[in-house]
Length: 133
Image: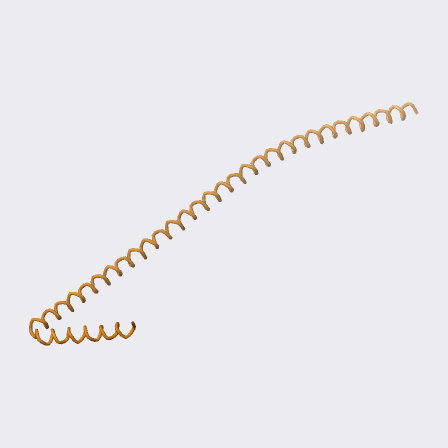
């Protein structure tokens, strides 16, 4: 029986040693996993920071492009409106000059008609202003 007792003690010691060795290996693996997890989290943080920086640049560039586009559209519209106004003013000036030239030609060719026409217009204006008083 001593043989059986010593075998049982040996088996108990072997199991105990294996349990300690297994616990030690599990602890080492847990430490390695913890280190790997910390490294992965650190990498994840840096990746998120890089994504955030990229998005910030994108939003900034998109805003700058939208501003440039709006400014260019505004300048184009302003330039066209300015050109249209300038053309309208030039056309009006030409029409006034043309009408003035025609009135001068008419006054030179028919001076009596011009005098009577002017007198008639003056009388009508006088009657209109007199009737209001």
